[in-house]
Length: 474
Image (cartoon, rainbow, N blue to C red; front, side):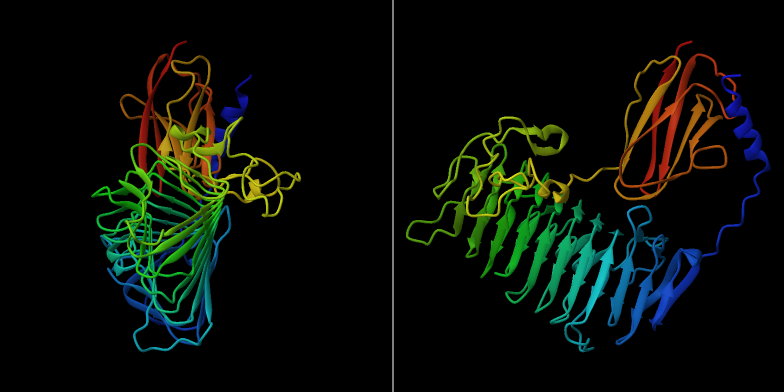
């Protein structure tokens, strides 16, 4: 009787009449003012497409834009793509091997000055373009804002794996993740022009790669600022630099954590750029944190109240292990006793509890902690625990962004035993990004206890399919 609920659920599942899936909507050509709705999703891009000047494209939460042609999504007009934490909007490859990314070009078609487009809770993946694999922003005086977006797995064949900003364009990004993008210059983001303006707050740059300059960031502008950003796990093919300050750049970083990147130098200024660091942590293994100035040249770095491995002259700087909570697991919060707690610039506003500001991206007190960047979840299925198990076990998985998943158990012959998440017999299959857990109690879809043995668990999501093995011992 204890498992009567399984039998009832299964019986109800049998009589559920599923509505037919909505048909895809094919789109191409010139887009005028309109709204793309979840009911008509996915929107499949079949050929060249552009939003025309003085027109507004609104995209509802839950819409997928899939590219069946290798074309750019060109914006001469305005876009408002605003998803939610539980229902994101996604720009992804469809049947095409790649697509050209979102492009706001400077090619003679003038967009109204100071016009602005916005993306919120949007994923942009699989794009490839010469300048800006995910997003290319080159229209002078145009503003683009990104909020809670994921720009991942894009390729800039010349510059800017995730994003390339040029001319007088303006970019605002907050609470965004720039993950696993690649380009010869600026594997994460690139600023090509010294008139570019960009501001990043509470963002994560992780797993980006480059071959020439700046696997995370390459900058030529003095107008780029980074606040409370985490820059970690980025790799340079030639082990050159994580952040490359080129030409007349003069980027500013405040309360950022730059740690554990695979490069020879973390900050590079061989091309004449400069950087100002305040309340930052720059740490890693076997790397030069800041390139020393050449004899007879001006020091390119202005560093104060920061923890720099190997030491650096400047007011309030220290050279002490920051005691991250668990850097090996990607947790860069400050552990108990960290020398970076309450040692930031005393002239900065106090923490919420009245204490002095910390160094690094993660505050240990006050409201700043709410807005601090969180290391992004990856698509993963973890080993169940306990394993072996009796009578139940917990299955854990993580998702990089919100979406629908299916989690099911099979026997070793491939026969379905239990649908735990998604499908008529499982729980609702829509999850937010982050870590999740589901319990399997050793019963099948019909409420029957299964026999001892080895079982397979299969996680299916937009990112792919993952499987694991578990053992039940009665």
